[in-house]
Image (cartoon, rainbow over all chains, first blue to last red; front, side):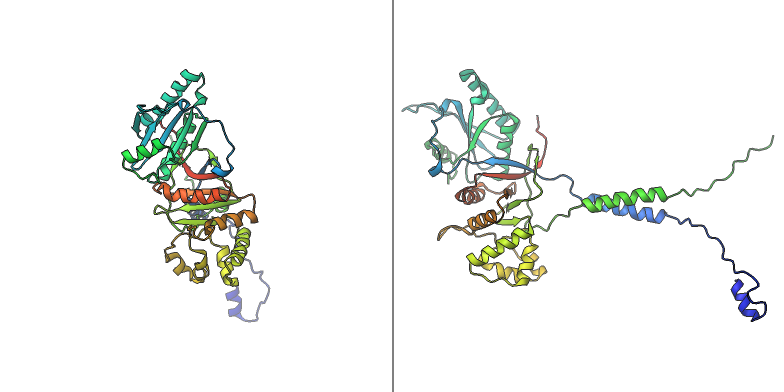
Length: 189
Length: 201
């Protein structure tokens, strides 16, 4: 305003008055900025994937040709789980020696705690009664082609949950396996 | 008695501190966010009680889609380029600089190696719309292309760990083909990628 006046009045009284700018407050209203900040935070929080996927380590036995000869495991220490289609497990225990007239009972179980877990725990206690240590139990996992990845993960998980020390993923090569596959109407290979 | 007059206070609060906090958090989230890379195929991973987090680097990742298509990915761009060099000599393919640049940025892919140059020549839109047929795991005529990928990648970076990401519903026969290829290359140890869950009682 002061300047406007001086320019109006021309050259007369030039510079006699100091031009004074009004002292403004340095405070700015930050509300909008905070709003924006939190909006972006919300976005990034939602976009972040916090839980990293976990991994499960799988060790497969080496292929036949390089396999070191191991003493055969007593079949009465083992349990076989065949993973079939439609989330079914065919579980059986084969006897030490198969003779004519030997009967093998095969259970058809599912992946629920009352199915698979109960079976494993029952086998653990049976093996403990026979050999004095439940860690002697050896579980053979034999996935059939129609089972899926979730089934394998679930079974391996169940091994960890029940603390089964010895297990392996094998191919269903046993004659009993073929018989079961045939009986349940599934392809073996 | 005179009325007690309460002085009227301004309702505006000093926002400076709040603003500082907001932007501090914002910076944190911006820096920690790792956007999901564009995936070749949607994969719904199964859940397990496994507690080991997936390592940050040196990962060779195989993905298997529900219909059994196989995809391959390396996490490191330098190894990706080295792998491409090896592939170009093995399969007698010539890659241009543009193609190399595209390949360097690809998280995962699943095409026959012989069709790789054509795939790399596509525009980004075409590439994302293209339905990838999956890697060629056919073993006719010696070792399969997948075995070559495993072998070359591991020769370029021998700390590589192998991770397999399979969909819940992927059938075992697809999974088994990959495992056979891995075992042919003497890999007997690999990791299955799962999401976390707690054991039900």
